[in-house]
Image (cartoon, rainbow over all chains, first blue to last red; front, side):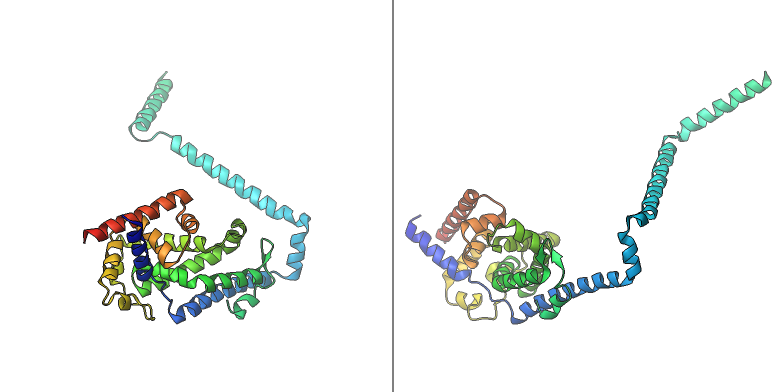
Length: 116
Length: 187
């Protein structure tokens, strides 16, 4: 392939793949959507701040008032840990045929001890 | 973005950059590159409707990550980053529909402006042929040519947009043109 034919093909490609002008309303559409998102985010932020009174905001700044939230988090963590241990124990407990056989064996042994 | 869009957050800051300044920078970015993103989207999906949606999604996604992209770009142009977003969205578009464009590039809807494809193609069989052969290339080769010729991107920019090395991109474009040339000579 000669340089000439390559150059010709490149010229053809430039001609064929011309930039496409976006529709006039697209710019305003994108702009409106972005503005709406920004406004919504700002509104959410401001309503969250409004919900907290000045005294609440002030009290949040005092580390002495962090004891309750920390205790609540600790209690939650302990409760969660306990739930995990219980569920692990449940999982370890044998079920099905092996469990039934084990319980029968235990009751037979108890009866034998009683007979003696 | 409009004034109303930035007023509420003018005082806010994102990683040290005032929000209002960030919004102004983004406005510049999207005004400068709207045509690039739209052109790329149009040549990827083959119709105006989906190209508009894809362009809008690309800018929304870009807006979310703009601050970080600006910091990480170290002053380099952000066009490849924008086109990469559009590229990923277009790939998702095709993957979600499990198909290639409903219409190939040759048959895309005629754009409503003086350079429209149909006007160019009319009476110029060679152009129609090149569009047809372009559609037969592999996705990566076709995308590289769209970036080069429709968006006038440099090899380095294309490399960044496609996440390849400069060398690999140079080879990709060379092979794409060579294949196209061979296909054209078969006619």
